[in-house]
Length: 119
Image 1 (cartoon, rainbow, N blue to C red):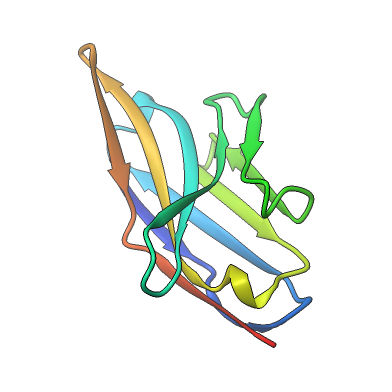
Image 2: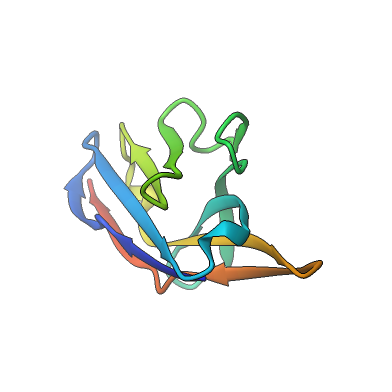
């Protein structure tokens, strides 16, 4: 599975951005998908996850109520709607996809998209 993120950019505090994660390849093997964020000089932190059918989601406390994760399986694309952005939301956002092929679990990652929130 190959993942490509898009939609990052520079935005002022209080603004919004919508990230996309397009999947290709063996998309039939994808189960849950999610987003993580890596701030400058820090490790990657969990942001949000969504189940295969989109019926269940979970968020980090720092983004709950401001970010919304969703997916369109017909388009093989996952989204992250980010509202009320704060400077501390700045970082590289990576999407991931959990797959199961022939009973073997794996995780695929995108290359990341930069989000910068100015104060």
